Image 1 (cartoon, one colour):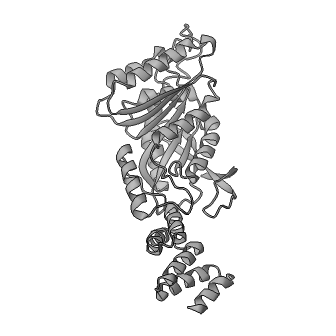
Image 2: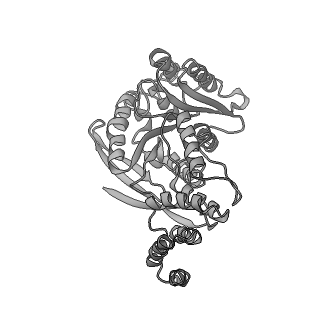
Length: 382
């Protein structure tokens, strides 16, 4: 079953410098989990121009009830501006977050004081089953419903960060773990022991680890354990990790900054820098750029399809019409019903004297926009 919820977010300016307010649909699904022996809800947000013919990385967000909205809004803004790839964003909800995301019953709290009340057999210790649910049921369902690339990341904050840390040696699905102000103090740092004892030197993973400010040393044990985790990760050559502390942010406010910096770390080199119409850029440049990025991240990422439209437009204004046509042909192979691109490639064909191709492009554009008298005039003048 699914229910559609509509959220308003501001998306980025289009190529033609038009800023639109778009409706982004958040789809609420339920899954009958055999592993957890209960029905679980999860939320999905697709790229604003989702196309089943393209492949998308997937961003899985723990604690969806509190973290999905901000994560999804930031992802949309970054991806629509070309800073990171477009993702399918999946929010994982919890009926009992302590039970879902812990692997034992902790007898200490974040101050390392004895606490035998907060955690018990009713609210703790189901983490292995929850991981199995994510990997064997949820991810499999997402892969069946949507066009996924196989590149997955998991975002966890607080107890969710502890969960991400603990599963590092045993998970088989995530190329990146985003670990924000994690509760590594849980069970006296058992996640660190889990990593030290069980993580293979062959394991590849990109990890962004962050912590909040230690105001007046009030949370010394919490930060001490995060620093120990950071040091532990450095012992594994194939773990690509970065650690950052936000001295002026508290446990909840640091999430926004962590996400922005985590995406910057993970996708360093993804964005192709370009200015205005004077930029020197063509198909070979952008394809070589994303080949280099793919080699760095050890996973194939292809150029965003809209980049080919932008490259075509830039080359048209530079009067490099063959470069323009090459880029627009690739774009139109995926977005064949874009009247702007069809008219532009028609103009390029016309200028270099390929009247037949020009007429064909103009005609396709006119069929999509029969009210466009300019297109009608161009067809008649050929």
